Length: 209
Image (cartoon, rainbow, N blue to C red; front, top):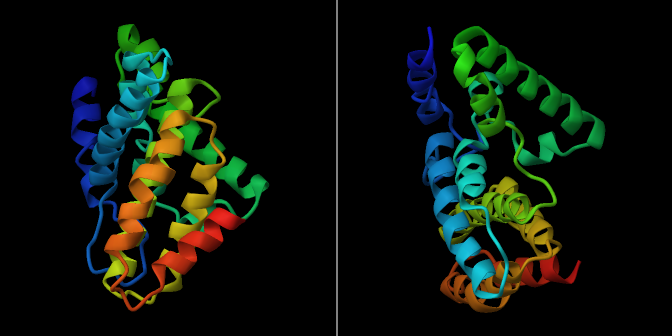
């Protein structure tokens, strides 16, 4: 019981594999994904600050490091399934949030419950920090899919992942998005130019939509 239960549960995130059921050259756990999202978010936030934005770094670290904790209870559900409809997405989010709330109620000492409710909440919102989290989360989706496409993985799932994440990112109003699209993405596309899969075409189609 207590904080020990929470600390022990973190190991479960290492065992949950992202994009289950598809051939992958490299497996990625939810735990590794969460760590990378924090790293992306740090740099994205620095870019925002360099253009005059004010970033609440404590909030940013809390929501990025804990944003997928609820997958301990429901696992990693593939993006096309998760976003099949707004109704389905809302239902999954309700279940996930409900199970996190139950976990906090059952295992976290009373004096820490408000802290855990804040830290393990859904962090994606219209705040600067919430939008940075959204970009960082999708950025890792892009990198995971890109790595597979670059190696010639013909699973359609990774084309969908790459394309949908690009479309989502380009619609988020942040200066770090502009920097990614103009200063980072071209390097990615150039690096993938020798792949048997036409990454440049997929990229251009996504940006044109």
